[in-house]
Length: 113
Image (tube, rainbow, N blue to C red; front, side, top):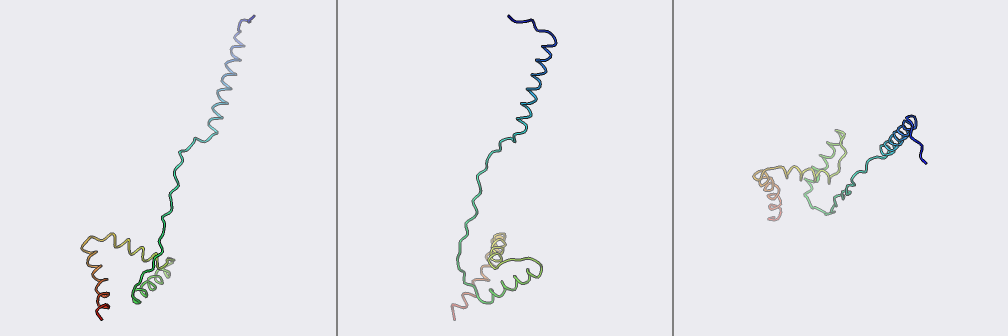
């Protein structure tokens, strides 16, 4: 047999329900929201390739490296070559052609000797 609910027992039930709701909210708030996992980026693969350049240009690389070192920038010759490639990629076509001609002309002169 059920006893009729009194106002004090109804208040107790409501208070218990409120406490339960607060505990559930606290439990879900404590857990960090699940983040979407990103695929790890693969590091760019490098290729080791030897390049032949004239001694004078090799000396220029060494001089540039020393200039940068005196300014506090530690850089390798390969990084200097990569920086040069980036600069070449920014040139418009006419400037690029002129620059390439300047590189090819001394090489052609050496072959004709």
